[in-house]
Amino acid sequence: MEHPCSIFEDLERYVVRDAPPTVYYIPDFITEDEESQLLQQVYKAPKTKWTQLSNRRLQNWGGLPRPKGMLGEKLPDWLLKYCERISALGAFAGKTANHVLVNEYKPGEGIMPHEDGPLYHPTVTTISLGSHTLLDFYRPISAQELDEVPQTEESRYLLSLLVRPRSLLILQDDMYQRLLHGIQGTHHDSLTERVANLLATGVLPGATLTRGTRVSLTVRHVPIVMRANLLLGRK
Ligand SMILES: O=C(O)CCC(=O)C(=O)O
Image 1 (cartoon, rainbow, N blue to C red):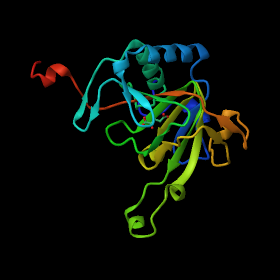
Image 2 (image 1 turned 90 degrees about the horizontal axis):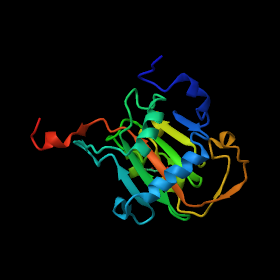
Image 3 (image 1 turned 120 degrees about the vertical axis):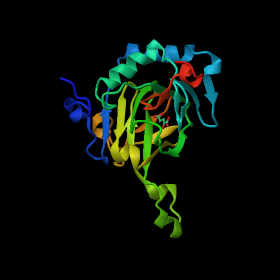
Image 4 (image 1 turned 60 degrees about the horizontal axis):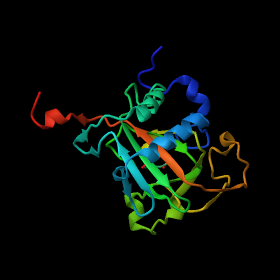
């Protein structure tokens, strides 16, 4: 039976109950073989496909999302397969993901706290490859707070999620729309009681994990897509 508007009910057991709505953490979403095939494809891409940023490098697949829409580009089959597998869970309200950002983080690299914003369907799904990371979540600065004592990143920090290799993370609702997420540029992660999904990861509280190179596939749906021939004024 189809569930066009919501995540399938059998995913309920993957909901992280100690986090605000809604996080699904699915360990071993892909196999070790699939992980190494994906890594091979990522590293087979031409050098020109990489954009080097100050603290990580990335590949953009599917087109560049812009406020007026995305000039869509066909996804390669090796990514389409996972877009379809994730979309079949009902993650994008019956639509199929059409955009993938590949991020590569060496140990010590990270990403500043940010929101993913309104260009996407309000769901972000992430497959992790190669290494774990700790994804940190922060309250936004409210207008009222701006007038009062300045809010530090530390005081806005709420919780973390441990994402292990081969897992799938799905963020929706407040976790997507209200909170900011980021990754500290560090070499080691100490797992405290602030890691909301620790139980589901099989890692013991108090453990310290050493980061290796992590590649993440951020799989999303961009609702407004323009076709190249429309832009050229052709039917
Ligand atoms: O690598 C990740 O898991 C997070 C990536 C991210 O936040 C982004 O691409 O906007």
